[in-house]
Amino acid sequence: MNFSATDLQNLKLSLGTFVLSLALGGGLIYLSNQSLAHSLKEREAAQKQLTEARTQLDAAQNDQGNMSVYALKYNALLTQKVIGTEQRLDWMEGLEKLRQQGSVLDFKYTIAPQQSYSPNPPVDAGNYQLSRSSMTLQIDLLHEEQLLHLFADMHNQMNGWFMLDGCSISRTSTTNEMAPLKADCTGGWFTMKSKSAP
Image 1 (cartoon, rainbow, N blue to C red):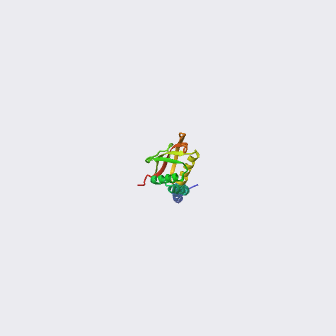
Image 2 (image 1 turned 30 degrees about the vertical axis):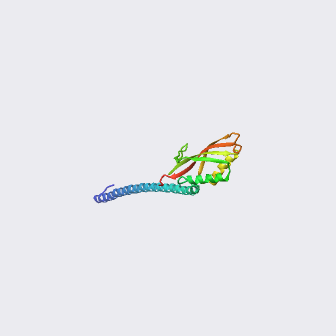
Image 3 (image 1 turned 90 degrees about the vertical axis):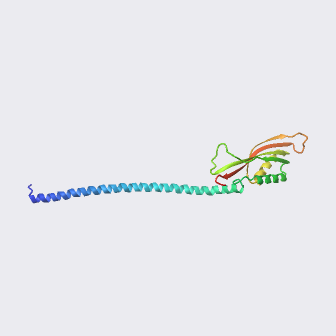
């Protein structure tokens, strides 16, 4: 096969066009690969954002459910005057009403100054400080069941959160027929106050 000078000229032009086409095709393939990689990164970032948004939505819905449950408990504690300042006067008035009801023969009590309280094991109280006002009771009884009735009345008729630590019951001398038993009890009134409250 013989090539003339004009054939070579045409062949050069065709080869140049072919090489240029290869270069342009290679460039377009490179650019499309770069565009694909960028799109995949953006998709991955969008998927991550979507997952985070779903997690936050689930947490918010869970918090909303908890808020309705805890709001009832919180409002009950407010009604019982457990949250807020110490209710010493209310406790004294409530104990005096119980004395007048006569569920026991008689009793004496002392309420100590309020002190910060740390339960064992420790409990995370969040933004609240738990305090306790210790109380001792000396109770004259006819029989042991009166003691149970007194503490049930304290729970049912008085505002506050009283926790009984313990009681010791002893017989009095046989000369005192009116009160054959005496109970010495200790416990405490609990209050919770927000740490951010004045």
